Amino acid sequence: NAGVTQTPKFQVLKTGQSMTLQCAQDMNHEYMSWYRQDPGMGLRLIHYSVGAGITDQGEVPNGYNVSRSTTEDFPLRLLSAAPSQTSVYFCASSSTSFFSYNEQFFGPGTRLTVL
Amino acid sequence: GQSLEQPSEVTAVEGAIVQINCTYQTSGFYGLSWYQQHDGGAPTFLSYNGLDGLEETGRFSSFLSRSDSYGYLLLQELQMKDSASYFCAVRSGYSTLTFGKGTMLLVSP
Image (cartoon, rainbow over all chains, first blue to last red; front, side, top):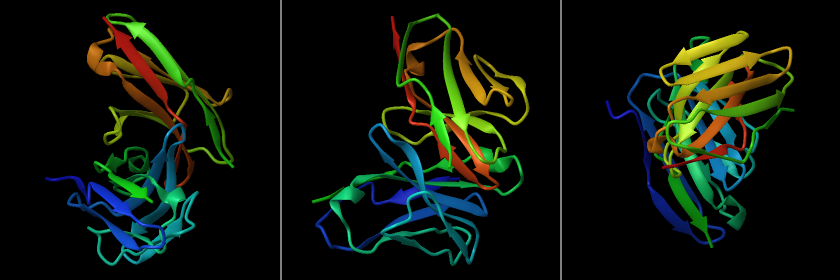
């Protein structure tokens, strides 16, 4: 199993550009989530999904959109990139049993720079 | 809202024991987890406490006191490879984790 995969690994955007960060998992996990990690800020939840067709906002959702059409994929869209969105983005997944939400499996991250 | 406090940095020597504390304030509570992250790589799950007490997994143990809103991660027989960042995370919503800002552990020879 590949686990959680993310593409691209690195990306540089200009202010105002849009792009989609891809996330896929092959563990048949119902729960998927996106975090951003900034220096000294830990991991902050952007959006999450408890199953196909169901998404919800996390702590810092502004400027990002998500959709969940399949169990495997959970793309994150930046609508109009801003320098404040320069960060490392992690996708994570877990099953949805009561305990499993505590043990999330993370992808390798996408390092995004917005100029 | 939720807030978690943990030290920003801890240093120790190989073979020693180190404790990383975490205090939290949250409106809901479904458990406290700990994650390890090496050099900005993918965070990996270490342990979980849903009830008060100590959970042991090899060289790592984690403790929770819900009445004190406090937990800690205990690392024994430290090795150089344990140098990493450690995050506590509160499960405050049924399906969501809120992470602390992380503690960087530096293990020296």
